[in-house]
Length: 127
Ligand code: 5GP
Ligand code: ZN
Image (cartoon, rainbow, N blue to C red; front, side, top):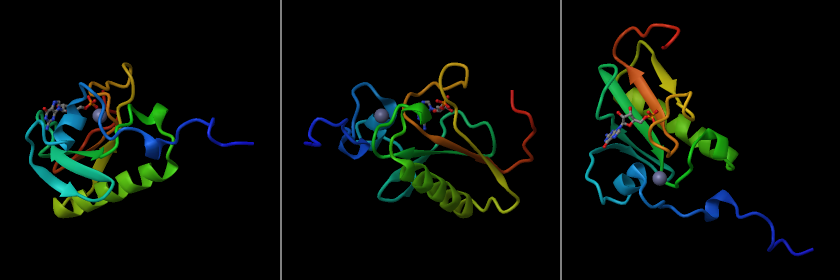
C-alpha cells in the first residue's frame, strides 16, 4: 500500500503559523532577545515574569500544545534546552518547568512552550 495517503508527519508541518506570536518571534517579524538557541528550540525572557528568572523555551516548529504533539522526540529536545537555560541562569538551587495546556491549564499563547521558573523558592501547589 502506498504511504502517500497517511497523515502528514509533524516534521512536515509548517514552521510558521499565521497570527502566532511565537512563530512571529521565531521568524524575527517581532523583535525579541534570544537567550538560548539550538536546532530545535529557542528561548526568550517572559514579558511578564512570575519569578526572578522566567524564560520560555519554544520549539522552532509550530505545535499548538502538548495535545497536538506528534513527535515524541521534541519534548526531549525541549527539556534538554530547558536544562541548558537553567544552567546558563545559574539556577543551581532548583527550578520549575511548567507547560500550561488549554484554557483550564491557563495557556494563553497557542504555540507549545515550557516556562522555566527560578531564582526564588517556589510554592506548591500552584494556583
Ligand atoms: P502561557 O500563558 O501560554 O502558558 O504562556 C505565555 C507566556 O507568554 C505568558 O507568560 C506571557 O507573559 C508571555 N508573553 C506574552 N506575550 C509575550 C511577548 O510579546 N513577549 C514575551 N517575551 N513573552 C510574552
Ligand atoms: Zn507558532
